[in-house]
Amino acid sequence: MEAFLCGAAVAGIIVLSLFFYLLNTARKKGNVDKNQFGKKNYAPVYVSIADKPDSIIRGMNNFVREAQKTESAGDKWRWIPMFIFFAGIGVALIDVLLFLLGYTSFVFIIGGFLLWVAAIVMARSLRKSDILDFSPRYNGVKQILHTLRDDLKPGSTFLGHLDLTGSMLSTKVARETQDAQNRTTQLFNDPWLSLKAKLYDGNVLRVTASQKTKKRKSYWKRSRISGKTKSKPEKFKGSHQELKVRIVVNPEAYIIKPNNQFSLNKDVGKYKIQQLSTEGGMINILAVSPFEEVEQEHILGFLKSAYSLLERKAA
Image 1 (spheres, one colour):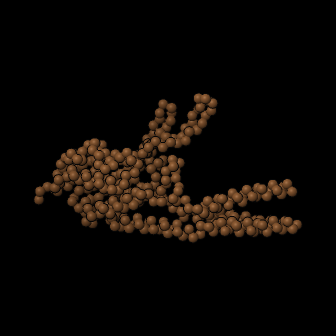
Image 2 (cartoon, one colour):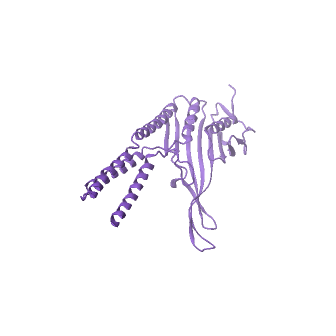
Image 3 (cartoon, one colour):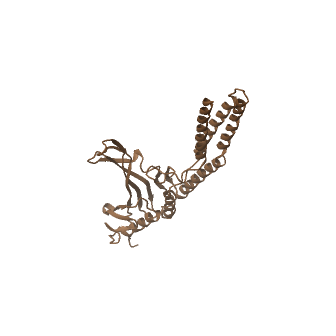
């Protein structure tokens, strides 16, 4: 009898664990998924920009539609693994009933176990249909392309990329530093937007928006009181945005003229101009923002302000 009770307790724990696993898997995770620093994760997306603006925007819209279509198809089957789970319990209980009647059989228990395996496989497959939310930068870049499209030279295209795969990937580590306590801090460089365009007025515009992030790696520290060594987790050390703008000026249409409203150390929206050069017929600007996110209207506003350094030649 004790062996039976012990086996029943173990079986109950397994059944409850499987139940809560399938219940958790059946729930959508896209809107609440966060990384180890408590920041919201977004869908990892990389878009190669090498086409006319309308085609790029249409492709980006189609990609979102297809992703949502895949998720919607998965939603229709989301709770089926739970029904299979309960069906497996019902099948397994047939053997329990036969055991109480004095018959020994494991056929139905094995059948129930196979149904549970099928439920787990199906649940994991349906989980893959979940998508994370798209980053606000995704729609922001569409707005930038839509706004700049009328300024393009007829027949020309945008060139560049939109990289939303993550700002703290190992491939984006720019350098590492160590402090006096031998703790390592990683500095990440994420050029998430790169854009080049030949404009209607003959100028060539280059824009690069980057996110600079610091993260201190986990390390071991010995306690001064107990003498025990403890592991300290990774720590987010801050993030800021940088914007590089280059305008190769068409000398037949413009002259470069200094502007006190757009000069070194001036604040333009969320950005502050840190470097400004107008030599060699080019305008090169480096602006920095202390904010972790800079909306598209601030990027567009900065580009508009940069054009205040140009004065049209008399016809």
